[in-house]
Length: 450
Image (cartoon, rainbow, N blue to C red):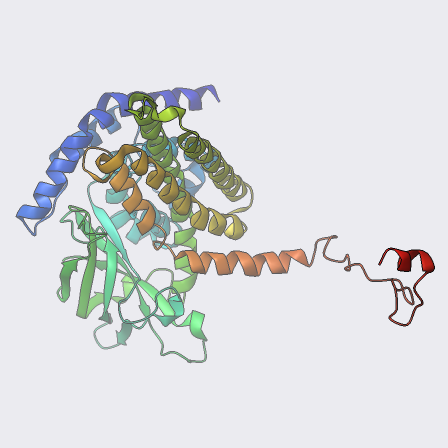
């Protein structure tokens, strides 16, 4: 516990000394890179922050010892001793930067890389881990995860239509399909794509969930085209971004399959669980910063002869925001604790609840804070517009709200069957007992009152 508190303080110091003072520089450099070239690279300040984070021992905080043991990479890759519950506390602090993932990226704890690294660690061969996991953990390269498609309803992952076919003579998979909203694909630092596609036609005897596979596709493989960056509420989010991509007869060797054919859905579910909770952990920090901005604003502005903080409606907004953040945090902590105890699969309900509750909460808190700031809240002078954008986007990322609501609802109905309360039947009127019949005579006393 003392070691964790020291680590937490070290992170707080890094945020105060390095991250917060460089937020505006990061925003300016990122926008400049996106506007001036199609060759996107890290903002120079991010490169500097990465080196400083390494020097302070704040690198790969997400990489737990149990995962490091599964990865089996040896000395230098042993992982930290943090539980998901402990990491959540640190992740929340990272999320307080004005760009939700600035601090996380500086410490090699950002999406989609953490999820991709965990995927390779759990399902990759030793050769795949040496080739891709090590440089990812070292921060020498970045990665992307290509799952979502523009031509189908991707909320149902069984709709995936991108084809992965076998060329037996060449010993290669041939990949064809269009993907979009592929986070990080536009960066020149992105060297590996984890690609999900169909290796058997829909309706094959293996069934829907046995028809998808995942292959590792180097980003310099011929046939990959980055069509365009997708803008999130008008922002291309350079130099990381979210891209529409075309895969046209892209060839990779059979050795690039991850865990074997037909295991795509299993891998995707294992990957998305931890990613969902990491996003939610960071969003808690975003909400805390939005609330702090709102409190500072309402205590410093005067309207109609008194401070904004003296108006009951403002106090109600502050109170509701405080309660909603704390409620959401409890939900995230409950999910993290269950993952630590029983694994991601057992925590599906808690993960899905957090995923639809937390982004909506942040959206609401940021909106209140924007209202308190007046027109300034819409501008680049606060982090509120970025917070609102991130929260809105994350209501789609890793599954839309509706999918998670459906998951929670179905699991709850199933779990209710084992509850002792479920067996309690509704009350029924005693047999033969009634209040009054239309043919009953009315007493003289009652008639006198009519």
